[in-house]
Image 1 (spheres, helix red, strand yellow):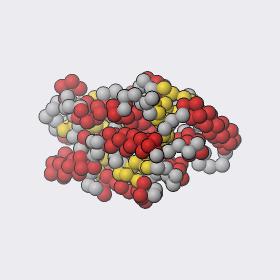
Image 2 (tube, rainbow, N blue to C red):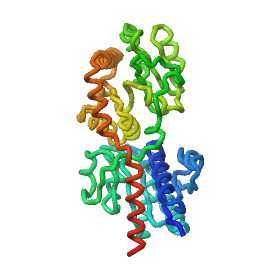
Image 3 (tube, rainbow, N blue to C red):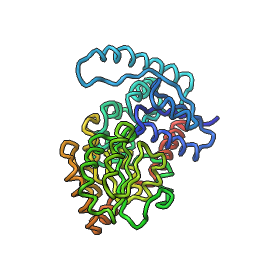
Image 4 (spheres, rainbow, N blue to C red):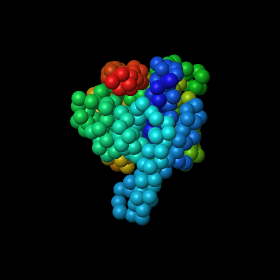
Length: 368
């Protein structure tokens, strides 16, 4: 009979896709393995996980409000229900191990696993871990992190700096300027504010265009705006001679990474994992409302390693964004050094390393 794995993580792609990457790596090593995902009912993972070809069991989840409000009533109802549903699912599936990749859903699932004396492991993407992972990390068998900076939040003897699990397409993509409609001789700046876009970044880019247009013969821009600002941004670009590809969302992000010279982006853990794998220098604008301000911690980690330049969202203006882009356009040596430092932070074997470690834990447990 094959080994059984439960994976739980959700709410955002940054918690969902690492779980999928780990699951695929486990199946490569153990083709007979059975994998079940547990996630939030009606949440993003409830659609993404089945589409990726994996079994999915939903539970009720509720994030903790940051201030006193009526939403705490939902917490007191949904969290216990989610916990007892997790117990029922685990009792029926009988996993050999429970894997958490982050998000509110992990709390009840990992707690249920611990109560049933199942080995639990945690994959922490951020430099500043969330409260749930920090607490449950005390009882986890192993914790896999991307940032050295996060080790201090967990028992050091159980923590491994593996890097974040990233899908193989990120590594395998080749430059394809012609396919994307780009000029391979021009300096390509890719602007991404996440899947929903980022208004502050969109508006700053609009204000930066008068300065950047002086370099229209040298520069081109790929800009993901999100649905909300797409028309405003498109109209702004029409006023200037800069070559630009503008979409609310790009499904071929791997091709774009492979054809980019400089990123302008938020500093979510998975974005940074992907751009460091590609060795991309970046101007990082942390999302200011991220839980525990973890995006600022992530950005600082890259900046301190010479792979990125951080601009706080509150300080972001068109002029200073344009100045930073232009300075890197002019200083090819600094850009190359940033790219080298970024590449040094990338961990191309992270997913396989995590999967091997998890399988080793399970087989060691079964032999005892």
